[in-house]
Length: 267
Image (tube, rainbow, N blue to C red; front, side, top):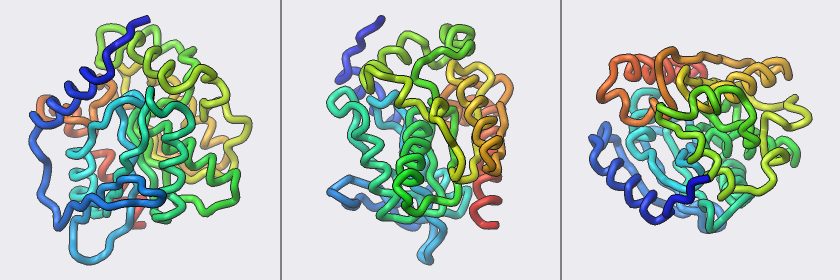
């Protein structure tokens, strides 16, 4: 298994984010303190209140990446976005980030919770935490290429885990930074998904996480949630981050996602 240098990974992630266009200008973007001192960034597209989406970024539980994505969601969907700067592995392994996202959900009472990749995982796990505690849930989960099975036992991990944007070796390392007991920490393997929020779940054809995202959508629908599920053909993991700048297919897929979010949140 590979053992990347976490500091170098984070610096590389910051450089790539800085090299991308900033994204749309908004009415305001403000860094504030959430519950228990958790840092959050509040994106407002207008002066008047809009429905709120709590966003958990991806990055393999280790990186922080998604400012442009949050700006684009706020602008395109006419929603406020509250991005959670949750504690990250390996310094803060399972369940620290889940604790942070769940705390923000209890505090903010959003219309929806969203996340990409590891952030999609945290969104589902935070919803499970709130459901089991009897706390109010968001009305909607927005899950983009989510991790849902940390055992990494689905066929797409092998079939798509080399030659595309998410490498199976990196994925294995990232999960090991997060937890040494992946099965109980996997939302797809939760005994019961009844009572979970409705969901938008978008996966990508050439993504190592494709099969577990598809399987989670199927299980959630069987448990009674209304699920909008789409597997985007020809795209790779992370298509929501900057791939619209170089690929028309990614731009079109992102617009479909934004249209789904706006339709369900403003219904």
